[in-house]
Length: 56
Image (cartoon, rainbow, N blue to C red; front, side, top):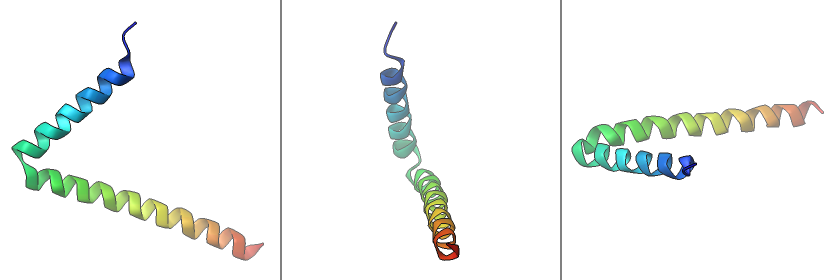
């Protein structure tokens, strides 16, 4: 059985490089949007635990 995880990782890396090289501004917009989602998620988790601790 081939190492599927390694193959998928290489496919993702090749796709990302292709996307960046063919349309860098769109790739930057997508990355910026994804970063905002991650940032908001971490902030919401921190707010949840802050509220949880303050009630205790």
